[in-house]
Length: 561
Ligand SMILES: [Zn+2]
Image 1: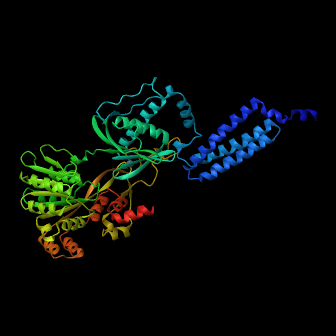
Image 2 (image 1 turned 30 degrees about the horizontal axis):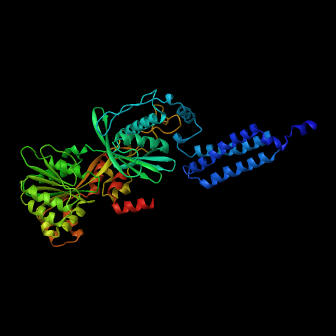
Image 3 (image 1 turned 180 degrees about the vertical axis):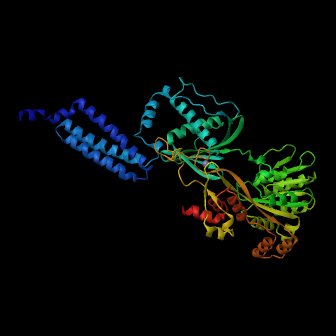
């Protein structure tokens, strides 16, 4: 009894410096952990107040009990249990919710934490040759001397650019959201989400890339634009770099400067019939050809490939573009900026040199339209119109002309196009299409044995077992990285302007009548042309629906989502 009494510390002992130190050593990590878990809760979409409240509340009870109990050791054990227990519980819970690379109770995370402590342990990894805005090769940091931040920034930027190229992304976006940065690529015109980056790492990478792109690293808020380039198997790829500040931190965007503008007419994906007709119309002499497409659907590439059908050494070729998209040898190219009036002036002065072919990227100015109509009597004009199909393009052109008869006078053809993604030939999956769907599309079920789609089943190894990585996640197709698509091809709708059509439009006929006349003339609509790509196994029904759906519907759907 006396021994027990003796073991009870008198209250005064709490003021021993050792014990006060012990209290601090245990309380401080707890005070650090609670706000961290609260911020982290956003990642798992758990109410942050609940996480913070529980951890703080239970710990506070432990602390009160500890201070109130006369037995220091017992109190310590109670406090430790009430703080470490719920904290561990939260970590296990959140690890179950976040993607593998963000889990904290894993070997790889713990080793990376200890590696962070020792800068020398971080290996500098160069995967690509990157050149700065002045064309100088970016030098890798010194393995021994460089700070941990410099190495992390260099490696992170290398990984990001390597990832971007291996996905064949045309654009990339790194946006801070809370404690992390969301990474998205635009591949073949569709968004692909990549694993998020840690917010602090993302900031290091952005600062590193800003310096390479010739931007002011201290300017974190105002938008800036610069350029870097990458050497990939002796091919230079230029990237436009844009940075700007958001409420959560810095945002970085990349845009690959496309070389696809060099494509030839027969590589665009036209059916034989369409290619024959457009080639017939694309002859020097009087005439207007309208090429239309929704934004970012290859309009510029098609205009250039039509222009390139003409010999620039024996003929006078001219382009008028808001911004010159691609420098062509021996072609007089003019940029008119954003001012439609500037375009008209440039057009009038270019026509004085009597060019054989004039390519114009867009025309929104009625006066310029009337100059085009006049010029098209003697020379070939290739005109771009932003529209979803050939009928809309025709209506837009008639509207800017203000006079339907004039608009139709020299017009030979309206070509409309969209780009569809091509199925990855490594992993596309054959299936029997639903007969009712075929009937809807006016196709004979007997003629079509199979369609293809993106894979619905996991990839299998030699023993027919699903291919998985160490964490049990399915290993995606190495060719398309699991997107199911590889590259894009054009789908073309060709509206031939016949005399019958000219009369109908001049008389202000309804669209249904105009469409009926085109149908009689064997015209295939965009959706039907796209379906030909599905029948040929090049694309999927889902992809055709995605790109040929009217934009208003797609926008409404996106809003709902
Ligand atoms: Zn694939």
